[in-house]
Length: 61
Image (cartoon, helix red, strand yellow):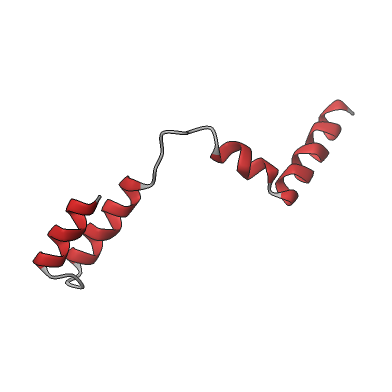
């Protein structure tokens, strides 16, 4: 019965978005810079960015 209560509370928090907000705040040092660098590298590798644009974007981050 206790497990069912915990499961119901977890499902409610998941549906309202509070669960994602809680787990999103567990890593305050994550600024998204790493993900931005990966995207820039992928676009450069695909040929969508020139070398000059690539260097400008890398320097901004």
